[in-house]
Amino acid sequence: MATGLTELLDNFVKTHDNRQLLALPLAVLAVSLVILLVSFVSSGSPVILGMEFQGGTQISVETTDSPAVLEKMYSSYPIIDARQTGSRVIMQFGVMDEEQQHQLETDVMDRYSSVQIQQVGPVYGQDLQVQAIKALIISFIGMAIVVFLIFRTFIPSAAVILSAFSDIMIAAAFMRVAGIELSLGTLAALLMLIGYSVDSDILLTNRVIKRRGTVEEKVSRAMHTGITMTTTTLAALAVMYLVSTFSYLVIPSFTQITLLSQISIVLIAGLFADMMNTWLLNTGILRWYVMKPEFRGRYNR
Image (cartoon, rainbow, N blue to C red; front, side, top):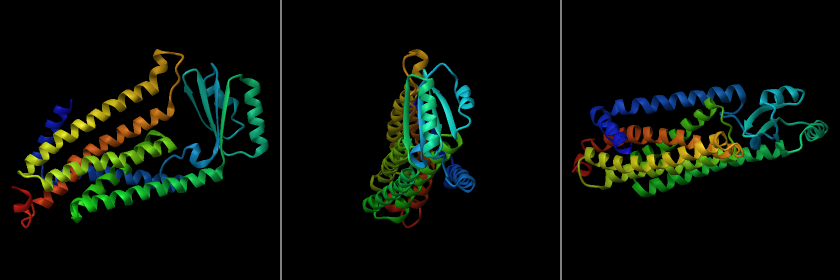
């Protein structure tokens, strides 16, 4: 699989000029930014905030009733979502006052024997939103500093940062379209994508700038190594997604592990975006940069 994908991408890169390589990833980035902007204007947040970031109550019950039945049963409360996870149904409610909260808990515990209740206050959720934003900003600043220290050249360094930024924006837009909430788990997945992106982009940039050979040869060698690394990670993530999402269909006693399912699918979407951004966007920028007349003798030898 990795070899076939490498050959396909390599042939595509060799048969298209730099503008053509940049067109697709920049178009996907633009669409992703539009999706996030529309979401922000309409709901006040570019992504769907999970309970950790907006507050509320999550109740898990073991029942044979369907999520639709439970949504109707508790429609008098601010129920946001109800989903099946194996033999259990997880219901998520918005923020309530103490009296309504107590009434809901009493109602559920009187009706069901196996009940798990988790609460997050709105103030704590707002604090986590601020911390999440700070974490992303600090991660990008730290990544930018490291990249500039490694290459000490503006355009190649900026290309690495642009590629990482695009990976995060595309993954966030995917979350919005797919209805995946921003939780502590999916936030961790977005932060991990920064590391994955920088890894493959630095591999490409280092090979093109610091190794000997023609630009085409250096890109091809870097692509073979990078695609092998990425597809290996994708295979592991695909297994994690299948096990955490559908294992209960094979073994009824198992339940869906929602957190692992969401982390794995966000990382899968982000890594596909990273392959596009690294081997089309970053390659197009680097190839244009090193083929400039003043640099041809330095980087193409």
